[in-house]
Length: 216
Image (cartoon, rainbow, N blue to C red; front, top):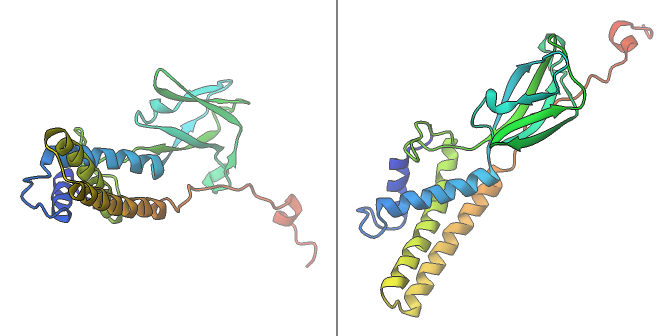
């Protein structure tokens, strides 16, 4: 199970050598975690799928009726007979209207057919912005920690520049630490993004391949 916001805040403060939160406060780290999660969602969104029963002569369907948190449609498929996983991608156009996600089929299906819609969701962290579930994989927690730590340094660095005159050495130290952590964050996201959404392929067998054995 992935970490809650409270646990992530503690990890970020520890990696920054500030376990008491004296310099990198809860407010700073929370804002930094939000920024890191936003970047992570852009690069490595959560993958999801839902089935929708076709409607005779209907072209337009609203995905957000099925999942209000849907972000982007990846594919729409016609489910194969008997759920045999021979699902065929069909032609559609997706669009956003009133911040709702829709897709329009080029050719309608019937009530006897089922559509499979594959789409993305944003990850959430328990305790961040009123969320009650952490959807990140446990191995992704350290990626978020690295990104949040980098953003926490930049946030504190900006605040300090506005209030006092930092020496060049101090500014350089902030910049170097943030850069190293952000590089680790980006490498972690690159590694996490090396995955693919499920794909389906039509059955290439001919009818005589499936039902006849002429060579026997």
